[in-house]
Length: 112
Image (tube, rainbow, N blue to C red; front, side, top):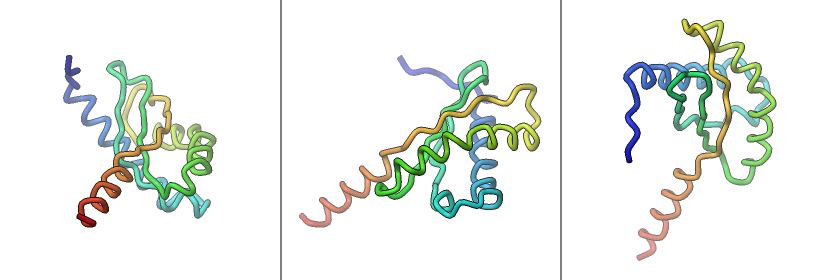
């Protein structure tokens, strides 16, 4: 069964993604976080939590995941100041393997 996402949830997904990209580029001082790419954000129906999918070089994936987890409070506080939402969702960061898988498939296809 395919779960339908409301228009509001889609808007909130995009707002959070856009704001997180800006925060990563402008507000974080750790250079390891400068290479993070936010690939997707999915909020729950009640907008209380959000899964933030990110991509980064595989060699630094564990370190960056830990840094993002530790900084989730900072990101949530910053989002609450910049977004016009009654409640700011809690953030959980999940490493997105899709970009790496796509690159591996492209590499295999080019070798054929």
